[in-house]
Image (cartoon, rainbow, N blue to C red):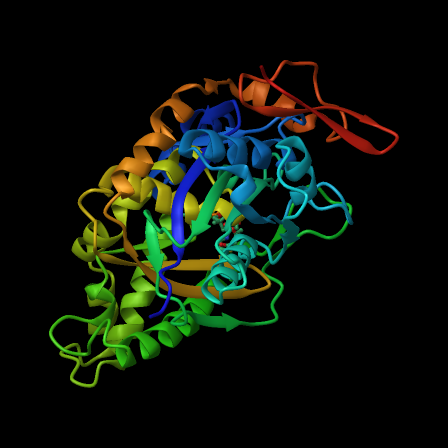
Length: 418
Ligand code: CAA
């Protein structure tokens, strides 16, 4: 019998400050409706140099271990997916191993492919366990990033930061993955990138949206072909995509999930042999169905709309938001997930929500995680953005969180709040 493998539990870490997106719009002389209904944002996380990727990743991993009672000696693999690491050589994962005093017998490494890096780590961990190579051990995959485009740029309202730590095991209380059915699509494009030495990403914004949609189409069709063959979805009655209870997308900004869902429906409508929507115009109209978006996607976006883009973690924030609100309702139902990383790579995969999802999510205490943040005015956000990345301010980390305190001899030193 095939092993059941997937996500047992998760934990979220967010920066201690945020701005209200309408404050940002007003400061930029933009109609707030562009950022709220045009992009789908409400709030945006703001980091200071002390809250770097290591600090966020370590805080999320420590929280996962504490909240879910993970026995550290059972952890055999720690992967950090990030595109905003802190060194060209030393991985974030090695810092997390040291800060959390995790076993020296573990395999540790970082994975990078823009926002897809976390999914690369999740798949490596899942396949390691499914193959039997894990020999009963569990894996921790941390998706951690700080999204930065810079002041007064088009990408500015789509910044954010944070980390999601995933516990991957043979007890998938949150989501049992359909191993082997993933669909993938990769293309060599310059849609979003960050040349060495730059803190801010370079992005061809509208082109990046098109690349996302094209890669989604390839990945979704790949998954659908295997899912139909495996009998998980059918070309009869409703569309195959409609047979998934929910779909969580990579969310660089919330409106992108709506565009992604329209594109996924368009794939089904174009490929259906007996499509009732004969003309391209009729298919486009049906693809945009607000009812379908409301039923399958909207409930996953609560956290993303309050935190912003977290690159590798954005898809897993959508999963967290979905299961936080609907974990009990979705038990034993199949959901779809779409990961996208610029450059580019998309992967569509699916899984069945576990019966203990609501119980596991309650332990993640996401309302408290968000409620502890401080809303700051735009002047303070701009001051923080202008601080050098190597100049953390002297500030004690809150209990259970980590913070960069100093860089000495090119070595980064961290403290844990007691
Ligand atoms: N009221 C309501 N809506 C309004 C409005 C108003 N007053 N003014 C504009 N809008 C709407 C627009 O119609 C548009 O909606 P649609 O896309 O549905 O037509 C939306 O607000 C945005 O308007 P613009 O396209 O004019 O905005 P922009 O050109 O200033 O920038 C952006 C938008 C390209 C997304 C920019 O924020 C950006 O470059 N972001 C970073 C890149 C990004 O996130 N790319 C996503 C794909 S790549 C990826 O996913 C990887 C990753 O994580 C980065």
